Amino acid sequence: SNLIISDLLLKLDNFEKKHEFIENGLTLNKLAIKFNTNSNYLSQVINEYKEVNFNRYLSELRINYITNKLYNDKVYLSYKIETLAEKCGIASRTNFSNLFQEINGIRPIDFIKKRNQDLENNQILQSHSA
Image (tube, rainbow, N blue to C red; front, side, top):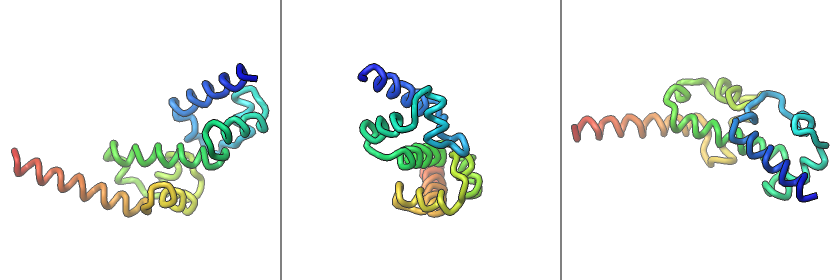
């Protein structure tokens, strides 16, 4: 029913806003239980309204979250790839690197190098204009 769908969409929205997707070992079943629904129904809603399957949905949320952190919080730039993977709920470093590259079109290590260079260049520009 539409009521159930809008309830699930609201729960997914809160799940995204509160960054609950970074929880390690999160599965469709665990999320369905948390949302008080069945996994088939939740899967269907994600497929239809998010236009991806559950695993892809979770991966994109996690990689976008960590990409944002790398971009806006300098401390993340000093973390090892394993740590970054952990921080966004991805268990394997390899899986993290592959997903990061697939979603961002650049390996995490190269993203970090580029971000550090950009920050250095900005500092140089600022010190020259000061």
